[in-house]
Length: 382
Length: 54
Ligand SMILES: [Zn+2]
Image 1 (cartoon, rainbow over the protein chains, first blue to last red):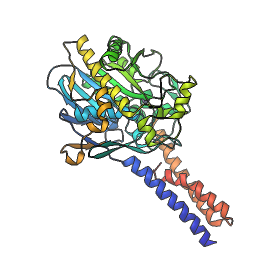
Image 2 (cartoon, rainbow over the protein chains, first blue to last red):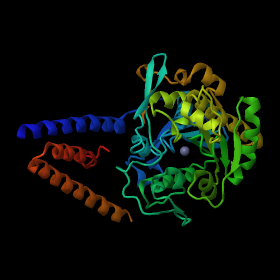
Image 3 (tube, helix red, strand yellow):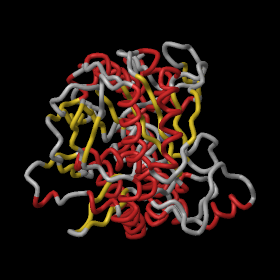
Image 4 (cartoon, each protein chain N blue to C red):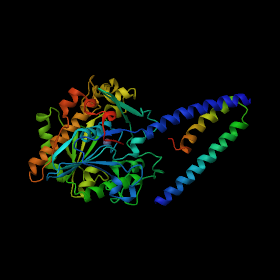
């Protein structure tokens, strides 16, 4: 009987070690960032607010300063780390971008805690690899919500500060429901507060928050704009089909919906706030197998079927929504926004070179624009 | 608020450790192999959280 107990315990221990190792290596996977020619400085979010310094959400901020006069733009990648194109599009700016007018600040892991966990019971892959000529780059697949290891317990109802609006309990760990944050709040609220402090101190003029959405979600392939960004967003939405070859709609940020970046950043700072959405079939509830391949190719016959049944807000066919397409939409939309901004406000220009646009990302693939950390001297880790 | 969540979190980890120990005691005392297997499987998520792995 003792032998039987030992065998059963050994089985449990094996499962614990294998599973535990997988969870541990996911949480501690180091993602390389090869600093491009345009990066002039790298600071920490905690430099702007002590309450986040040294914590898991004390993320890197990459500064690309042209040295020439102009506006300051902030790109938020990784607000929702289960939307990988949002992080990778920002990555392409850090590794390739060279600002020629104005200044850019980039976050690759805006909610770093959420990038260290995947959706509980979702059976998500813990990571994915972008293939390159020299091998590949491995990235963490993340979640929509901060890890319960970093923020727990959740309340019965999440009461947003300062509006007092009641939200779903789990959204107290949702970075894009915690704006403008609270200095003495949870780690997610403190991260939002730290970003607000940074936006105010660095006098950021324009914030672009990058996202991806399931095709069953009505807010998709669109720009959500704060009222001070409506003219700009409309301009960009009009230019994209002709200049870049794809459509992106434009929606107004609802005034009564609180906690979102497109609402609160605009309300609590001088910055204009926009949010970009790209389509990600991986997030659709009707998807088939939740694999790395699906994450990258965006091909899913079940989501196509849902489309035929009229359940989707974006088109999908057998070609799916490849991650290159989703990343290219984001890079082009950002570059187009900077060009449109400069046309509207020529005295505060923004200009960036070296970042591939939609057609280039699709033609050459994302991996072409990720550089080899082994042969680079300036490498940081996320 | 933060102090309260910290206190609750600490209580939670103590509680997890307590339940895990109870399950290990039950595993030792058990005489049926089905029950032993069940204890081991149920124990896993408790240990994963106790060791802050998931
Ligand atoms: Zn999102």
